[in-house]
Image (tube, rainbow, N blue to C red; front, top):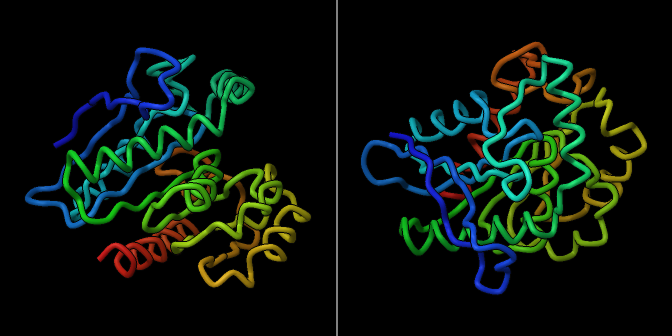
Length: 236
């Protein structure tokens, strides 16, 4: 069962009277854990809803927060449509990662208190992959996974704060994460006992998208299998 809900912001972060819109997919029976699914720059589109629904089918409560709700609520875009891709890229200029981390923290608290799940994990894609890294560094999320996260190489000064498991999937031919950024990620994170990095040589940004031209079936299945095993290990 899936539904759209609104959860409260953190009490100390009430910049507006509005709440945070969240897509919720519920499993049959009691969930054994929750997974926050942080979308790409294309909003909670059919691909992200499918990811949530698939996690619910595996027994998790899946929750995808809108990341652009403050200035583009309800937006859904298609990466394969050039006009919509350009619209999505323009939205990044208005995005505040610090506020988004606080939204994620509010959702973690909501899931634990209101949904009464024991553990909460997070998986993010693209911009959401960056948020997976920041959530691992700034919140008490139980386990995080980032797919082709952007700008992580510029945030390595926060890696010392990572206290729970983090897995990052790195596309070797990522136009948004060049080779020097990938090298910096390895140099900054390979020795961190909490972090696991996986490289996918030759694959481009968005290779694990659920649908559309960017998807690489072999690479997506490999990365998703690793993510499944990671959450089974760390979320129970």
